[in-house]
Image 1 (tube, helix red, strand yellow):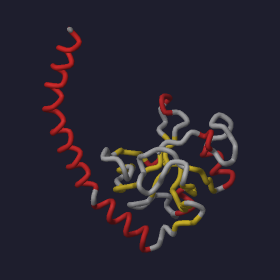
Image 2 (image 1 turned 120 degrees about the vertical axis):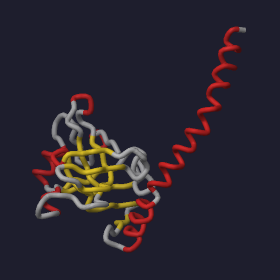
Image 3 (image 1 turned 180 degrees about the vertical axis):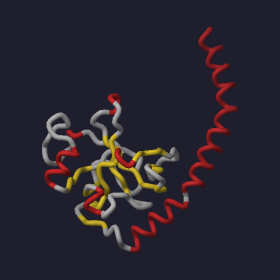
Length: 176
């Protein structure tokens, strides 16, 4: 889930303050999400997430499975882009992370993680992240991950045989 800092509720631009600086100074950062990778949990320009530094949430600073992590990829190409995805597995020195609406897993080192989602506001109402409804969602949606991968593979395999004749017909029509 990417977010440009133009939507930053504090009014700062990405080049004036980074999220790391804001979290160090204020301890918490709230921002409106954008992107599709965490749907159906988070919807663009509707939901506001509360982010805190991992070391303020957990004594060891290591996130737990099913936490939603905010991280930044330290590569010039991705400078200023932040991603908000769910931790699927905690390994030695890195997390396996995936968006709720994605099928590709990502390997994210501990030092890339900036914060953890500690609050969620949807349509002006706070969502209880410790409540039964949210825990059911996490357990239910996470268990569907393998089914989503299988469905995507089947969909691709069904589309592949249809592409060749379509391309051949398209080439013939271009010649006329």
